[in-house]
Amino acid sequence: MTESLLPNVDWEIMWKATVETLFMTGFSIIFTFILGIILGITLFLTGKGNMWNNAFVNKVISAIVNIFRSIPFIILLVLLIPLTTFLIGTMIGPKAALPSLIIGAAPFYARLVEIGLREVDKGVIEAAKSMGAKPTTIIFKVLLPESMPALVSGITVTTIALVGSTAMAGIIGAGGLGNLAYLQGFQRGNGDVTLVSTIIVLIIVFIIQFIGDYITKKLDKR
Amino acid sequence: MINVNAVKKIYTSRSGKVTAVDHVDLTIHSGEIFGIIGYSGAGKSTLIRMLNGLEIPTEGSVSVAGHEVSKIKGSKLRKARQEISMIFQHFNLLWSRTVKENIAFPLEIAGVKKSAREKKVLELIKLVGLEGREDAYPSQLSGGQKQRVGIARALASDPKVLLCDEATSALDPQTTDAILDLLVDINKRLGLTIVLITHEMHVIRKICHRVAVMEEGNVVETGPVIDVFKKPKKEITKRFVQQVIEPEEAKDTIDHLIAQYKTGSLVMLGFVGESAEQPVITNLIRSFSVSVNIIQGKISPTQNGSYGTLYIHMDGEKEEIEKAIQYLHSQEISVEVIEG
Image (cartoon, rainbow over all chains, first blue to last red):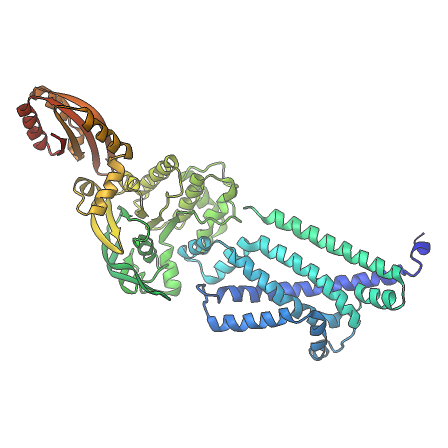
């Protein structure tokens, strides 16, 4: 039945593209998470009146974050071609999209992390200090657990944005559903391929949103 | 136990320098419950934060339980803080942790093993009366219960000093009393030195042994609570004492009565310590031919004796009244004739 309705859809290729999209999203989100948390914590702690109050470091990181957050992703992809070929050895295929995806998403997530950390009750941090907690204890036992719902909902938003970015990366040859929809669907006039690719992307986004919301709700004991 | 020596704290802000604490000297003894009272902005919050190094004095020195808190830094300060616990107005519990986990937090910081931690936590839960709520999250607790968790958490590291930062200001009167009773109990049972700051004289009256009154960064008056009640020297202290001994309504009632009585004298008696427990009125009626009408009275127990006020109206011969007043004066009672 699908053959008559969607004559141009090759499910094997569709499946391969889906896996590539999931691979790009999954792999880049791990690094985005780690990088974003590190940048976000540094931004927060070097901020005014905080533990490592340091205007210089704060300004520098803040500037880097702002610059990379402001560059449109499609331009970032092109700008980073030299870096990508240096790191990955090629600029084609799902792997080649990873550096741009991570560099595009991590600063965005870093800002969300910073906002999340700012929401942590100052009194609780003071209480931990008054108990004689080390800075690392405060980071890992107070700041991160107390901001966890914000960190998770932040990573949900970032992941969904990343799915969108992988599709864009597909246009310059990264593979995945975006690549498929563009090359096989749009350029060859196969509307059905574009449609199915879009639906799959939508399903992926819905699932991510659902999981993210569920975990956020579970974690939030406030 | 605690020595605050010529301490000054100046904040520099864009709009200029603000002196939060101005040359304060304090000595607090071991096992004492010491209260610091003042209105907001008096510098009491800054002062108590200097006792555990959350604030560093601009000048002067602070030593607590043998630690030069104002000088030490890093791991030394962190070690010292484990002996100087603090509880807060807004409890400052970690919402992400259960009651048990919150209380265990200082033990985790001190590097206590898990089995020992659990044992200690259960002891503390019993001490503060939170049995059955071990696995609740702070959001599921009432204000009083939250402060009990705060107290248990503060006691977990076996501190020598407990600092209370407006610990009852966010609680209703009944809960306040329950928490204050718990603090007295802990003070007696563990011999813990307690320093508390508050703007409520009620708190001072109920549990403190000694009190310091703060105004504009200065300690303007210090002494045993009963003495301060008996003879408040400064205007601000008088106002705080009034808070407890003379309820708002009293003034209206008195004004009303002054208008009502045509003869005799309206007298306010102030009782302190021993005299509050003597049958003064009985003696008064037996010894002098005056009629006594009790209008309003209140006795407040403090940690070192009672303090009370009594409004009476005396009627009779002018001479007899004079004599009766003379007698009252001789009884270590403060006498104030409101209308002659």
